[in-house]
Amino acid sequence: SFSRSAVNYNSGSKTAVSNIVMASTVLVTLLFLMPLFYYTPNLILAGIIITAVIGLIDFRTMGRLWKVDKLDFLACMTAFLGVLFFSVQGGLSLA
Image: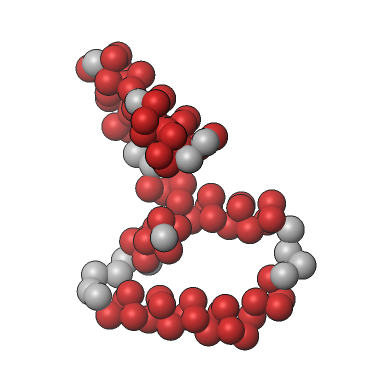
């Protein structure tokens, strides 16, 4: 998923072995730690995912896009907000 890729990228992984380690960690977490996460509010889980993914958004490029071509910036923001509030398919079809 996107959040696991973000964590993998931010940790500095460079080889495919990191995917095996990550998959093993997710499997162990799902098998043994899932009962602990059952009572965790969805808001907390969403915060963890947002924290992992926020580093993948390139705000500098969006600012540069605003300066270069406002129409492309509008398409970028439409897609971003559509994905944020609806779904990936909905956001991309809006743009």
